[in-house]
Each structure stands twice: as structure tokens, then as C-alpha cells.
Amino acid sequence: LLLDVYARQAAEICGIEMLQQLTRRETEERLGAELVEQLLDSGYDLRAVAARMTHLGYDLSSGRHHLVVAYVAGEGSERTCCDDAAHDLRWIAERDGANVLIVRYREAVLCLCSFAGDLPDRRARAWVRESLANLNNRVCHAGVSRLLEDVSGLREGAAQALDAVSLGQRIVQRISPYYYEELGLYRLL
Image 1 (cartoon, rainbow, N blue to C red):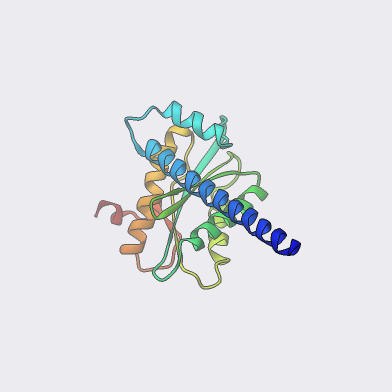
Image 2 (cartoon, helix red, strand yellow):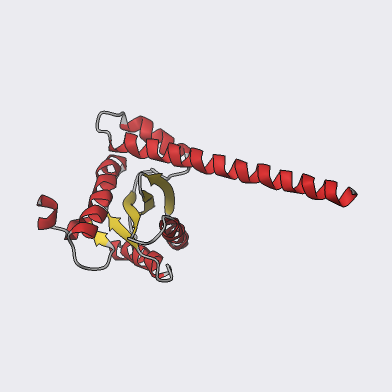
């Protein structure tokens, strides 16, 4: 009888913990989506967005470059593959001293990467390719912005990454990642 009571209490505690995790995840998703909406909204005060990003641990100090990567699940794949790719990107980039903020926005998972200005662009591109290589046959597309100089560029960078992944999926007949600067004529279409 005592074991039944302990088992029931343990089950209740596990259930409460699962509800807390779900609530935390839903809140993080909502706040991430709001942050990206504010970032993309040219009428919104960029200083307020920057303050919020700094509060979330994103490094906006001077002399840093930024890159935005948008991951979108391919047909037949679940969004969890995007989460996996984003977390791999964070781990890979942090080895090189980068700082990564992951936020969900609609069907995409965005990674905002901040890194020292002396890190070569090709190294940042290697992070993205490596993050996609670890997906074990799950399809996840990545759109990559141009290299950005400051926080004001993040607004444009988020739009570029989302555009690159959207255009890449629909028009470009090759495997991602899709780099905004390489889409050339497709951007005009």
C-alpha cells in the first residue's frame, strides 16, 4: 500500500514537471516569435529589440559580426529536425567563440549568431553545413543571411535568411543551405 502511494506521488510529480516544461517551451516560442516580429517591423524601435536580445544573452558589443540562419523542416520531416540543427549550430559555433540565440518564428527556427570580426565568413558557412550534416536522413532546409556588421543589420539579416530558405525551397534545385547573396536573380522574381 505504501508503495502505491509513493508511485502515485512520483507520477504526479512527473506530470507536474512535464506540464512545466511544456508551458516553458510554449512561452519561449511565443516570446521568440514576438522578438522576431519586432525585429522585422521597421516601425519598431530597434533599441528596444537590442535591449531584449541583450537580456536574452545575445552579444551585441561593437566589433562583432552577425549572421542569421533560418531552418525550415523539409517535406515529410518534423520541426524537431530544425531544433536539432539549430542546437548543433549553437554547439559548433560556440567552439569558435560565437554567441548564438535560437528563436522560433512561424514554421522556422532562427539562429542569430554573433562572432568576433576576425572570424572568416567561410568558417561561419562551415557551421551551417556541419549542422545540416548531422540530421540522419531528416530533411531540414537552411537559409543564410549575408554577413552583418551591427544590430541594425539584424533586421535585414532575419528577412534575408527567411527569404533565402523560402526561395531556395521553391525555386533553387539544389540541396540547402541557401545563401541569400548567392540567390541573385531569384531574389528579383
